[in-house]
Amino acid sequence: MAKNAREIITLECEVCKERNYQTEKNIKLQKERLQLKKYCKKCKKHTLHKEAK
Ligand SMILES: [Zn+2]
Image (cartoon, rainbow, N blue to C red; front, side, top):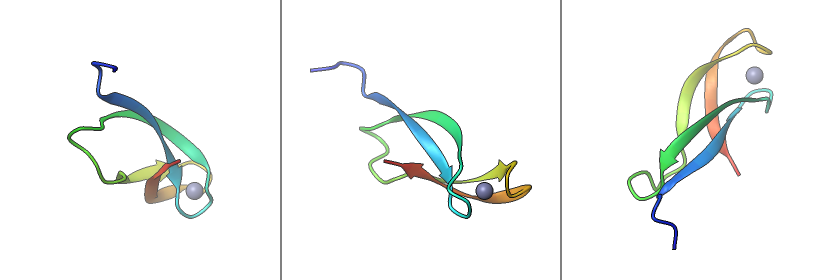
């Protein structure tokens, strides 16, 4: 078993599906999929980015 509960996840723009960000989350504390408002350089505005799987 891995003692590290963190996982690298990719954040994907919900509008254009571009994968713009990578971040870490603690899979023990954060069980839901992440959703963050982030700047998308393809859409040229802030959009909702969701965890890609
Ligand atoms: Zn976008």
